[in-house]
Length: 325
Image (cartoon, rainbow, N blue to C red; front, side, top):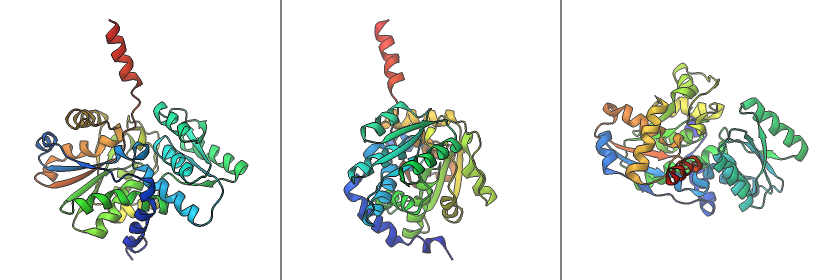
């Protein structure tokens, strides 16, 4: 039995309706200069313009809305390096629910400040999955809060699937869609929507070489956990989720690896040619298209730009230093 039967398109459609009051329908942009460099036509689904600056708002809003619909009046808790943390804090606030957030000490300051602004109560921990889960369990024991996973959760996946739904509603002629993969919620959701709407459209993941557990798992046909990830794409450091992997294993057509230099170059292209801010994780799919030019030559490609939460303090401090000299 196909996993598509476990995630019928009607469930994605219902998720989309449920979260519409809490999200933006983000724009689809293109760049003729980037198209020339890549040798194909690329349509960018700009989730960097989403509420909280990332696609994560979709999954968090759906998960919390489903809790609320069931009569839930408690609190929620999660662990996240940033984007899911912001999304859950904002979704919870919108629905009148308290949110406890466990974040690694290394989380970007811009994401930490956003969680605080949305009313999330932060507990910091060491930058490891064990530390995150340990702190979260302590909070659960103390508060009785319900865990909303950052990616390995049916309702979260259904929420993330709505980004590709919007993309294909406007661009049904696409021949492939690429999404970054960390925990796998966005890629799993993208693959579900894509294969439901048009099985001929390829669904690809893109991942940093320094955090390549999804690539390894996909090749091996079994889940291989992340160990000591090392990449500037901080949103893709986590291990692939179990449920996400089951979807990806069946529906995804391939996962491409790129290095940090290629990610930086792709960020520069997007910033320079499109005049929009994207974070490193967001630039990974474009880096993959550039690296796989022959594969995508002449095709119409969708790329999901996952988020734009960049800490600009260092950049502006450099400008200030130059202004003084």
